[in-house]
Amino acid sequence: GQAFRTQARLITTFELVPAGTDGGITPWGTLCGTVAAFVVGLVCVVAGLLSWKGMLIASVAGTLGMFADSYLGALLERRAWIGNDAVNFLSTTVAALVAISCAAWLH
Image 1 (cartoon, rainbow, N blue to C red):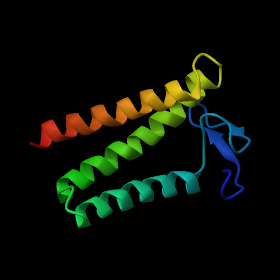
Image 2: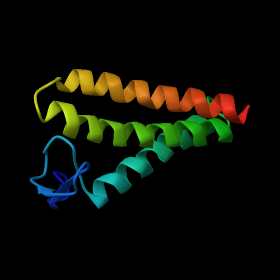
Image 3: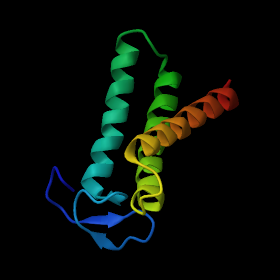
């Protein structure tokens, strides 16, 4: 939205919203966020910090955390029920729980 000057859609209802709106997503932003998660994971593999399986888990968890951030932004932050720091904390918690669950399931 903000980086590519494209119209965003609210993740909860898909209504058009201005770029930068809490909970707004765009195809380019979603693609770039997903690619970034995999690039960070790949760097960790190359650096010897993660296995390939760990990279996949971390990348998927990061991507789902990105969606959680947008969803919580639309649902709670946009209505001024919580602030951005709380949204970030909760979406990071979602990503961590996804990673832990996937790692336990695949172990």
